[in-house]
Image 1: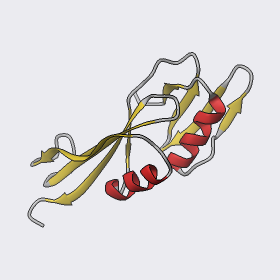
Image 2: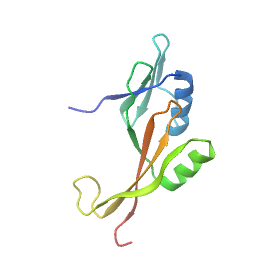
Image 3: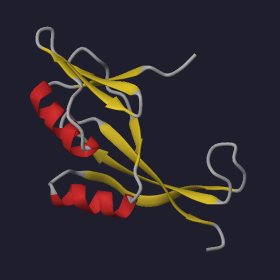
Image 4: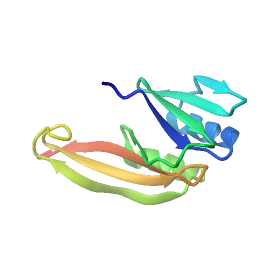
Amino acid sequence: MRFVQVAQHAEDLQRAAAFYSALLNAQPRAIFEPPGLVFFDVGGVRLLLESGAPSALLYFEVADLHGTVASLRGRGVRIISEPHLIFTHEDDVLGPADSEEWMAFLEDSEGNTVGLVSRIRSLGE
């Protein structure tokens, strides 16, 4: 089995498509109007925006968490939770061994919460 698609609630498809285009630095792969579906490719997994979908909590990995949050805040995006340490990976069960996992949370254009994830530094550096 392989993860293929995740759906996210979007009341206003144009507004949501613009938000996710800016967040992902990518244009939609496909738009079907009607019935009102917008698709993005996120690392080989489809992100579907549609009004009939329930709200999902999406997590996107970013290289520079602090910089990404600062840039989004500068564009007027509401930051729900500032970058903070979530977990220290001493082994490789859930992430690279000897790394720290940091997260921040923001609100998308449709009121959904989105998580940003980054491995800030290796332990001992």
